[in-house]
Image 1 (tube, rainbow, N blue to C red):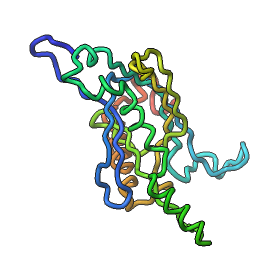
Image 2: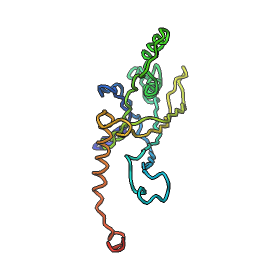
Image 3: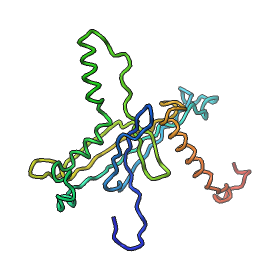
Length: 219
């Protein structure tokens, strides 16, 4: 954050967990500091199983598999200087923030207890409860339904009660597409908006082969 008058307001990225049935926000975890760097990989979904298949070489059977990798930093040192104004950090450090992020991976405790009761009665849960939809927010132009495939926490400093007060969180997240969620799921609709925005951005590039020193006959 900057204190210069007139400085633009920086949009914070983060995660939003949505109820899979109602799309109601269950939990929002903003990044304390936006990532310094972010890497993306795209893996096209082609049809041809073998190289050299002339009929299928350029065909696409669906959106690419897109993966985001980044590191988010959290630091409670500033809040600990004013414990009365930040009682949560004073009492627990970063444990609440880290627990909120990690809640995307855990089924609710009530679900676990219910499954245990059903198992004790000889009943088997056929369809487990659907997990919250995890949405990665990287500005207004990138609001992405994702599945976090790797999540690593490095705790770097602690208070006197051994609560972490500085931590780095390394995240690998794969974007969920309509192939994963369907066209009418809330996550599928978010993906379609992302797909449409990407096409709009691509349409703004209006270069022609002549910009590369080539004429149409050269292609």
